[in-house]
Image 1 (cartoon, rainbow, N blue to C red):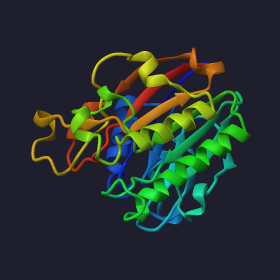
Image 2 (cartoon, helix red, strand yellow):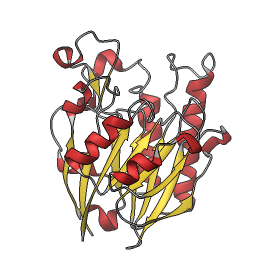
Image 3 (cartoon, one colour):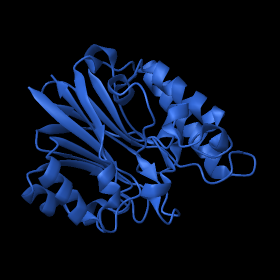
Image 4 (cartoon, helix red, strand yellow):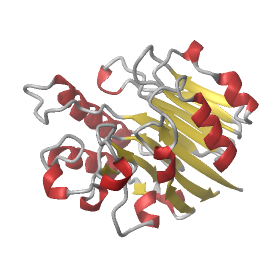
Length: 262
């Protein structure tokens, strides 16, 4: 039975609960994975989401920062989380569907402003987090798994508005791209979005700092959907809902979708 999964950095789920329910109503993904929820678990508006048809919810929360959640129409079992790089952050959660498919939802650290771990602790944390992800998936080779989330890296030249201009900007530096490639290789993950849309510029994030984000279109593809090779061939229908970035009081990210015939 096919199901559609979406991933969206909501940038405060309490502030934008109405946008979440609007997406649920308009697009009706079977599973919606959120990042940067920015609230403790007890503050998550679970009743609102359950009323919208998403009664199966697993989440990890943190006051004012981070936080991840999986909201599902389908039964899903909470199979835990990992504190990669021992940061003490709510950045990962995983669940298992009744068909055995495991879903990992990640919010990788943004990394601060300076791409130098000697002067920027946050950048070092980002690299360490990615290294820990690499090691985990190398030692626990995933099968029948989907990985989604805000990975905070735009890996390809056409995943950013200007490759040369962003080579020294956090999210597109060669060292970050290499670390993300190591994570992908360690789990043999397939980039589902780019398998479906192999050519052309593709973005999922536009800065709040741009006075006219749509016209300037200085975007980056920071949000991803990956799958293991045994199920990647069942994926199709990938899309990024750019228009959502233009909703009233939006997140700076747009949701990314894919459908799996499993």
